[in-house]
Length: 430
Image (tube, rainbow, N blue to C red; front, side, top):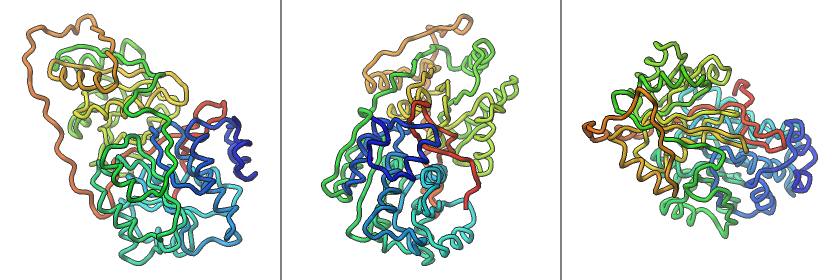
């Protein structure tokens, strides 16, 4: 199938072609016709599947080709609302809108916390067609009466599972209550837990279901290995692997914010240029770290689970689990950072005696036994004392602006066989 077969407006097809793509991804093949037909949509999709283009392309078409075409001027009130869990994902989605809508007179804006609200107010007053927002900051605007949601025609809830993980369910319900009763609803989630399905049942009306990635499956293009070791050996072993394997552009997962900072310092002292990203880092620090990582100035980026959500770096070759996650599903999210758009990736987990239980749970979830490897000089001790794995502290209640935890994605354009993915131009945002 080619994009020309999906019935999108010529201006949108032109923008897609200018990005070098002609073949839609599986989720795009299924979602675009459903959205164009005006159906509600419930889509199961991991990041990296092209889901952002899967809803931005048909939304752009509907706004520019609808019976109530208002594109001769910018809408004074938003016609489309995309709700995202993090500021980085909001930026990513809004960039995708601008990338594919560059030949259309459509205005878009991303609003999120952690930055001044006044420039956002000024842009809202000038008018916007597509508004992308995090829940907390959107409700800030609602409280200040600087945004009017009464004319929303299409509502998109992106990464619904992460929304619930971050404690946004009450904010989501508040936002939904402000929307017109008659509208099109699109929900995207990497997993559909009972809680997500309950939310979907109250939001979606006779939805079309799209499932392009079976629940909790790991990418087939990712080689997964486990390196057995002692707990005390991990830092030295990780440095050894960097030195002997010539690794570059490696995303390393730590369990806690403190652990991420400490590990980044250890790697840096070993001559492996590194930085840590997590929820306590400022927006500027996270943006700088990601930019340097994408540019190759950093060899390793050490992240916590929530901070890494949404990282979408083109052809990321390696993911290292320095520590296994406490939640098995997070393992799937972690290794999903690599092996995208048909490209190969490698996921390596350093597993000590304390983490056997987590490893067993992960293997049960993904229904496969992972290959075990032992590195000479770092063999695990048969008499290693077990110590309970300390879970990270529970996340603090999100602040009013909806403190985001994910990191900004890098240019993710997929294979040049024509699969638009989530886009990032890196340009300055309003």
